[in-house]
Image (cartoon, rainbow, N blue to C red):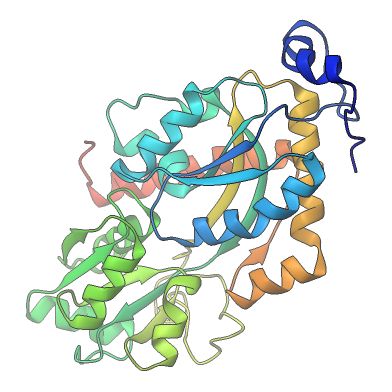
Length: 323
């Protein structure tokens, strides 16, 4: 826990001292409410942010406010954090799309994820599930591929350039099929249309689709993890269904603007790890089918470099034209 600043002058001058002198992780505290920007609407990113925010606020001695800034495949919210002052007052809940996919998917971005943001920690990760509307007569990937070759099918994604978009592009490339892409602004509208039959299929993370599968509103036919998902042992992986090396994991992590002093980064990394590993928080995250990671800033930075290379290869192989 951090000691509270109770002296009026210290509180008044904290921001100036932060810029003028080295910051001690043991001393640093935010001087006003902290903002956590979620760059996608109605997602598991939002769930994670709102789960972490109250505990982080207790540790920092300031309210932590979650703000949804969705749109443009995560670019709008991410850009806002990039433009924010590097004073520890603004964090980003980042994920595959705007961080490791967009650099290849877009010809020009208003930010460079590996230069304009500092990774704090990779918080959670999970595979995706290939879900179909129950009226789609496919109970495995082989049947889905055969159906796609016989008649037009459509699929939804949570946004252009998201993992849910490009994972289907991986399958289209690997299976030599064509499935029409229908992008949405977040998971909820995509799931609504999947249940309603307006689209035939979608790749979605567990937290967004398992309840609907349990209720019989959709059917799960594949998992994109390296092994079967613990809560869905009857759903085989893509690898088991004849697609070697077909692994597509989604992840969520926390970032700060470039230029943030290292002690502040260390402070957030320490507090995030403590919160994420708290038994009650971990239990809640596992309940919504997340695997908790909570690694170091350096480990997360390497993960991003590798993930960017991996998705870049997918985009090029699938022939997805940069936007």
